[in-house]
Image (cartoon, rainbow, N blue to C red; front, side, top):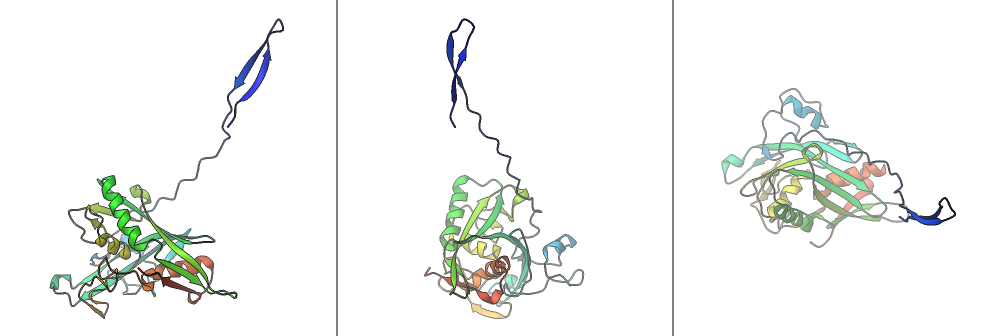
Length: 272
């Protein structure tokens, strides 16, 4: 931005140099991001009969009033996708847990944003958390990005060979009106929406739930995984690797954005 310099001729023939400050060009304000309804219920909190207000979160519908939502894996669950905003409702049934109190149904809303450009898939989780220090937020975000960011790629079949798009995941702190999920600060991490102040591997595991993944320990939905393990999967415990199945909703959303069959899209994970 430069100033304009000119000469002003005064009465009597004298001239004075005048510097006129430049004016910044007008730029219209950016349109505000659309507000989202507050999150309904924490995923993998005990699930009772869903409230009527939950029905708008359930994309597959077709169930009788007061019934438990359908039990569907991320590969089968229906979802809505509008302007990149994915929304669905998932459920899991756990059995075989050493603590009998854990043997019950869990479920809730899943929401995140998916975008594609010529080089990557960008997955964004918008989180609102009250009374969280910047230090705790930095630890949370660091734990999540370490385990989920650039750990996998979307492959898309094409006549000239498969194209590969790295999956970039980010977690941003926003106000409650724009949040996909609302997290409460507690003494230690308990579930998807109750996190302790430390950025440990449990946070990365809970973000896996935010992406629609069930737990992978004990017996879940009839699949026996065995006890929690540090090596088998991030959904068994946060130190485990991310696997292609953990990006299933991202894969299906990307196929819809690209207007290609879901079978044309795959996931490959890196050595993590």
